[in-house]
Amino acid sequence: MNAFKKIGLATAVTIGLTASAAAETELTMYYPIAVGGPLTAVVDGIVEEFESANPDIKVNAIYSGNYDDTRVRALSALASGEPAQLAVMFSIDAYDLIEQELIVAFEDVEGTDDEWLNSFYPALMANSRIEGKTWGIPFQRSTIVAYYNKDMFREAGLDPESPPSTWDELVDMGKKLTKEGTSGLMIPSTGYPYWMFQALAIQNGKELMSNDGLTTYFDDPEVVEALEFWNSLSTEHGIMPTGTVEWGTLRQAFLEGQTAMMWHSTGNLTAVKNSASFDFGVAELPANVRPGSPTGGGNFYIFQETSEEERAAAIKLIKFMTAPEQAAAWSIATGYMGVSPAAYETEALKAYTSEFPPALVARNQLENAVAEFSTFETARVREGLNNAIQAALTGSKSPADALAEAQASAVRLLSDYQ
Image (cartoon, rainbow, N blue to C red; front, side, top):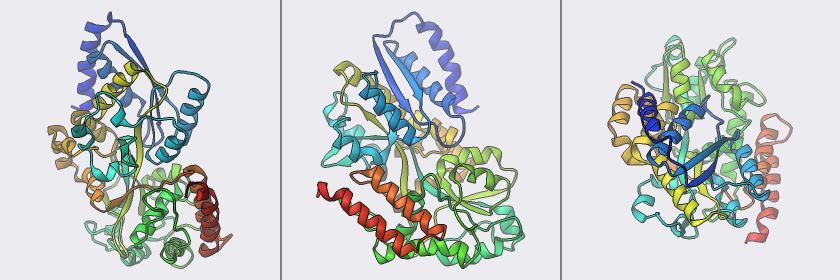
């Protein structure tokens, strides 16, 4: 039986026993539903289970679109005086939220302890720990993984159990997989182009930013080379469509056979598993100088303007949602990774990953993962980088010129923080 069906049955019984209890503390939680299909029922099931176990706490989950939409809606609510105690927002929003004094460090909230904070994968905490404190708790977390059509690999004479592990292999296999109506590879360049580009830069041996959020390296030769390689996949090698590839429709394009390989969030894994009419595989991203992917996804944040009672209730909710059993059920239902080693020791996730090993790929990739791109003035710096990537991929600017402009803009934006 599906893990969340089990939860739902338990919830229905427990709710009946506790319906008469009056909630003493009310929480409003903004939550991004952006990847992998209709997940509201999944989150609703977790919230209902929590309320059953904690009848004195009422949780209002507001589903607010993608990560950018969620940040805007949550911060607008705070600015207008509407209640909002916590949210799941981009892990990379931390610098801006700290700068605006909108969130509280978890070490400053009663109910937090070092054992709990240290129970999560260190790679998933890299965007959370800033200036000696923890500002976010991982929940809806991911790495970029490579999905590939094993049937197309067989038709092209390729080993379906040996996806490309290097850039050279990616190009060679991509050429053999490209045919009329089917691209060998698609990497999305809308939605989150900086995220895909960060993966390429890492694989070419270079980080895009410093660990303190103050410096970017967009015009570094290895970074420029990474964008030149991305561009060459269409202009020189012909294995990817020219121009931009849409983030939002790429999964469907893969399912319809329009591409043999795609790079996308592991958050799409369960949706692909449930919808694919062909044999598919999932692999870690290929390496050039080194293997690697940035982490991605969302963290829990607690807002500064909350009472002690609300903070205590928020910590209870966050601990509940990130507990091993819940994290395991969430991973099975969505494809996002379990956020702690303990999640993968649960019977549910051990059984699931034994039956469906691709569910381990994103977790295994954490060994070579780095913090997702984040700086002060993150949104504006990121916009400049996104524009540069798209300018290069559409041919309106050379990779070197586009990245030089993005670097100059980033230097201006970050100068006040130096």
